Image (tube, rainbow, N blue to C red; front, side):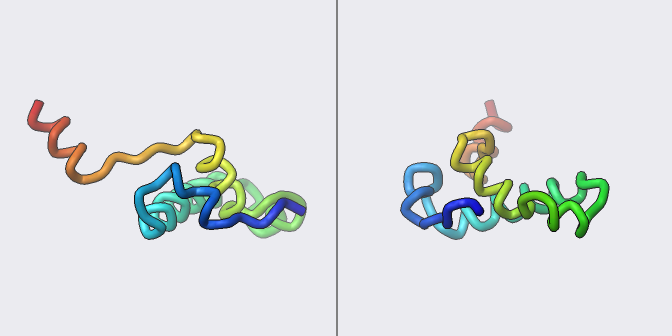
Length: 75
């Protein structure tokens, strides 16, 4: 059983808890869509939400805010 997550674990990764929820939920949806067996996979492995949060902690997921996206588009 994985250790429970704390909000403090993600303090240096995101500027707000809201952004963490949005990014992790989008990644969890991507993971669950890619799983071949759906519910049976959850019974034998980790849930997609836990996998997504693990990836966030490992630094495998990044995001671009609207301001950065606009600047990249204009340059």
